[in-house]
Length: 275
Image (tube, rainbow, N blue to C red; front, top):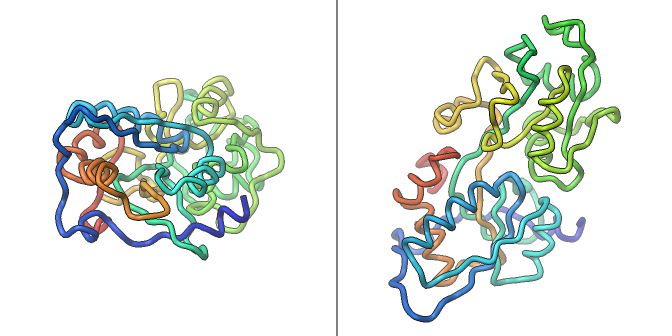
């Protein structure tokens, strides 16, 4: 993966800047084109929603969707110049270019068991928990209960986002339990009264409780207006500028119609994100 990571760089491009205007979906024809997309697991709900909605707009394309963790999906995209990656993480500094096209905003929700009375954490205290320096909820005003740290596996895009926004160059405690997916994090936290974990906001449900971070709740509105601190852009990224069918699809996702679909479960883009 080290070679693959060196191949990533964020080029500050959008379809608006590539073409000068948002492109509409192409007119359906009898010829069907397959678009190959690699998707990191936090964004499976998003790609399912987008492809279903776009298929109703343009029947001339079908989607070949492959899912997995960030490292595995990047490796695949680097082997296929006609494919694109949907991810909520791209490294800030690498050597070779990928074209990165923002389409949405995601929030990383920090979740605990619903019985937990701690409702808010600062980023500093959250970092201390994941470093293993705070080990009991009583230290944070909660019950006398050991903290069970749940983290994602190496290669997870959500873990990379969390480390970038919260941990910096600090290491997650070696006592953390490792969950192989966002759904597994939710299940583990829901079953463990002292647990804490992190997931894309799209995976929130009533079985877990999302903490406020710096007194800001992880809601779509707070992510959309940039108030929630654990915010990440969602990108389509590939080795080259998208050609006609992919260009139309990504352009639709950035258009008001596509943003309305995205806003069902994710936050739409800020104007500054697509300049």
